[in-house]
Length: 412
Ligand SMILES: *Cc1c(COP(=O)(O)O)cnc(C)c1O
Image 1 (cartoon, rainbow, N blue to C red):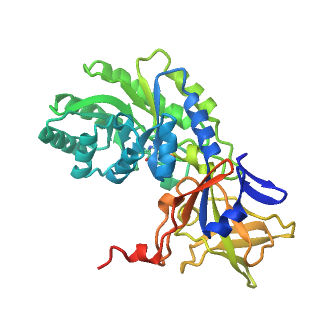
Image 2 (cartoon, helix red, strand yellow):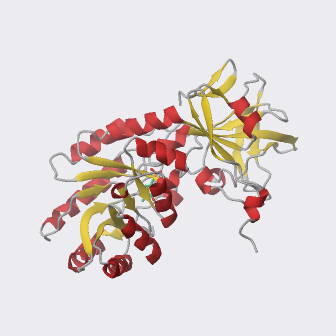
Image 3 (cartoon, helix red, strand yellow):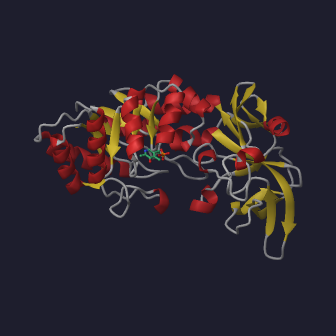
């Protein structure tokens, strides 16, 4: 977080004053740091340099084209979960053969788009999906490369909504079914099984669940060996956590060392799908204080950013650090930071210790770079925020603030 710092009491993103940005572009405003994005990608990617690997950034964490372009320029592939994300990745100049396609509900049209583009592989999540991919590929006279997303039944010790690799989750195939899937895949004319895949959850703060999943995948790999398949890829998914508050997730270097050592000597190319760890702490959401309101039981700070801008606190009860953009040195009190949306679930922070703030002042909501803008909506007919990418002393608008006209443009 070295690129988001107070200088003389005023918050800067790299060399750009957040107050100046807010004055110029209004609020709520997402602001990202190029230096942070680059540093995070490099730190992650280099952690696996001892073996053949491809880091496929998970587009859904933050899909702004400027950010995709930046990462593509550093050699990133992409992990996509929809035809829309494929469109974005291609538009950003990501080579199709660096794109992997995950998700439980790929539509025939999306499968066709991916085959037309020539993506590296589909991460297949059900038998029916496999058959559908085969049908679409056969009709197109193509062969689809696939991995199966194996559900290793590992508890990632994270929020239930973001754990994906347990028996009860909708994702992937269990180990027994996976064996059947590979054997069916081998016999389908338009399918070429080339890899194994898993993604057990998000915001993991320890390496153990990853290693448990990896062990299960490697044991499974041994079983596949007798089946005359050419398995070349092992995709370990994403999920490495970041510090939002007090958590101390493993550094990518530590994660990389554990994974590469477990894979040593195996003829496999590793694929990784990091999202949050690349962009999460590379962005903040800036909001203006509209009102402060004291009630007998609570004190509220009402800001102009809401759950439609950043839904994580409402959806997962997530913690986002919030600080004044201009440090005031005023006394700290206990407040709820809430937005203007007509829902009691619309809050950015509950029972938070915050210096007393006043109308018109600015707050920075930290760690908002991942699953912030991408999960935003127009609820309450609120235009979505503008996004700014800072690079040194330069600030570029990478997404204009939506207008009311934008909001009704498709309505008839
Ligand atoms: C969301 C997702 C990721 C990225 O997860 P992070 O926790 O942001 O790293 C990777 N792979 C798949 C399949 C996903 O759905």
